[in-house]
Image (tube, rainbow, N blue to C red):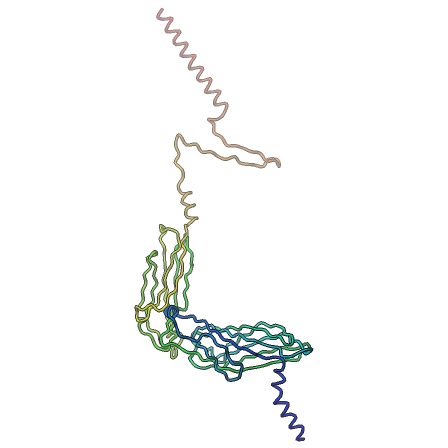
Length: 357
């Protein structure tokens, strides 16, 4: 009985090692890209944006992660079997960041691949950290699994930690929409923008500006209040602005930039986006104008009517429209009339000459 109990305990203790045999995560690299406001993009920020992470449980990943960051994990996965030991098929990795998305997990999976004994492969798994994330430390579960030809599963797992930080002042333009982005005959458009406080401090003097010198747009809203992202609801830490735009018909065609500017303390430029409004000529309008303005008619104006093709008894016959002035009968009548006039003049002259004599 004791032998059976000891055997069961040993089996339970060795089970994870057996599951992991032949499949191991041997390297972990982490890189961070930042979707910062303009003011932070142009500054030389002292941040740790990449790190090689020890492959062990409980390790803290030493990078600076902010709300809205893009985090990329690069894993090196190896088949540690040697010689005639099995190939591993359908190997893939999964990473879960627990409770980071308003209490829900973020989970991403790599592509799958095959590994021969002694070979390794690198895979990338990317995450977009939510903008409304709470500052704090989150558990990360990293797994790799696959199976051999006999469908025996092999799996390995690590648990590590990732810290998300917030900046004191971090206001951003998080959405810009110009609809439509190109106008022609109907020269009306709508510009909308949304701003968000992603920082830990409330902001009471925020200004949002739509500006385009070429289009004559100069809309400025000041003293906007945005609650701290740590304490606010979605509506309290965001602000939206919409502007209707109408371009006069006489305005020349072209591409015109519109600047969306976000100011801290009402005058310090903090973030900026640009959209282009394309103004095109109204082609249908110009055609309609040409039809509405007929050519002037007069004595020296001749309208040429193009020949038409008509079907007659299955044959194509060309017919031409013409006027009575161009008829041969009209020419004969006119010639006879001229002859009569000349004859009358000759007769009158002969009669007058006879009378004088």
